[in-house]
Amino acid sequence: MENCQQESHAITTTRKTSNIMENEHRLLEKAVSETEGNQNSDTFSANRGVAAFPCDKKLSYERYEGGRCEGTRRPSGDRSDRSVKFQGVTEVEDSKSPNGTLKSEGEDQQLSDISEKKCVRCGRGFCLTMEGKYATQEKCIHHWGKIENAVAPQLPQPHKVGVVGPVRTIRRYSCCGGKPNSGGCSVGQLHVWNGFGPGVNDSLDGYVQTRVRKTFPPDGNFGIYAVDCEMCYTAHGTEIIRVTVVASDGHLVYDRLVKPESDVIDYNTRFSGITAHDLNENATKSLRDVQNDLMGFINADTILVGHGLENDLRALRIIHGRVVDTSVIFPHSNGLPYRRSLKTLVSEFLQRDIQQDSSGHCSFEDARACMELMLWRIRTDFNCIFQSGVQNFLQLQNKFACICF
Ligand SMILES: [Zn+2]
Ligand SMILES: [Zn+2]
Image 1 (cartoon, rainbow, N blue to C red):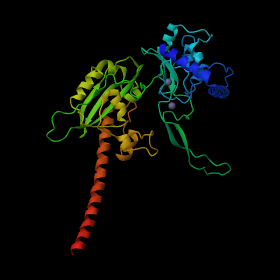
Image 2: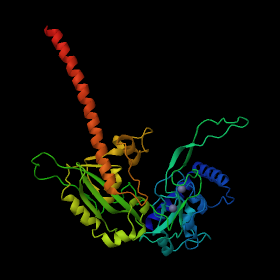
Image 3: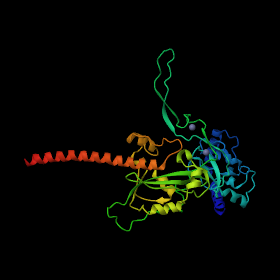
Image 4: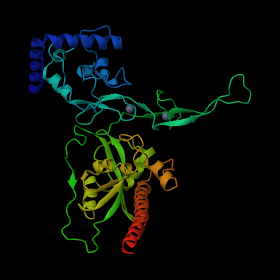
């Protein structure tokens, strides 16, 4: 509260002493108002407050307790996960209630207990309390697939019998073939978010760091393992529900179902392959148990292989330095943030199909595929080096022979 009042005071002082900025601000207000067709230019409406959500002109959280969320206006360029508390208002007017009266301390406190998130499936905004209770009770209508390029059927040419038009590519959702701007084809009970906080990882509570092994291994091998995790959605973001570790020879080293710490909002079964029944019947380990197990055979010098490994390590809450990521080793032609899917890489380089099961992915299959991809890469690169080395060696030998004889 005190910070909020200080911030408001600072803004008031700034506005009084800077007429130029005030004029610019009015112009900006006018421009935004005209853009959105908002007739009321005196106060910021809830719609304007969520302009950073491209697909969301009217957020459901306006309904929360008589539209109390309407004070949450963020800079229009801010596309972060928007998990900042409601005290981060930038307008002096926001310290007043909609009817112009000053808000009580309790009311402000209630607002500051709510955070605004962005749904990772449909892009809409929604409100959560700090305890993880949904203030926005709204179904999540989304596409579960990705937008991809596809070849459109060739159209017959008008007035030319038997002649078809040129080949065209169209962009469509892989799940239903819908256009990029089409409504969703799947319905979730609630919106979900990724759990990322400020600084991506938010606080490091519960994280463990791999330790340096006290003794040097006799064979000099600190271990090479592929890791893959499956996640579900809870009110606190994604949480791990399965972890699989595979050795470099492909055999299974560790595979456990993990009990999530918070209530599950969506089991993400389409991708995780895990159902509520699986977890209720077979999950015996907590995340802390899994961390202890993994620390038993993964040390600071162990090489971990994975695809988008930062997501797995974040879910495991493990800090580890020696990683090999197949999404980096096999980069997308457009560069980051684009990444090639594991399925595509395996199809192209290993000439086989994975993730064919409609009931969800298998982390064992994915981890094994990562390890195979890396072994393929190493084999291919070493062959190139070896062949190149032999040629260089022969060239050098010839030169040496010329000099000597
Ligand atoms: Zn959603
Ligand atoms: Zn779809």
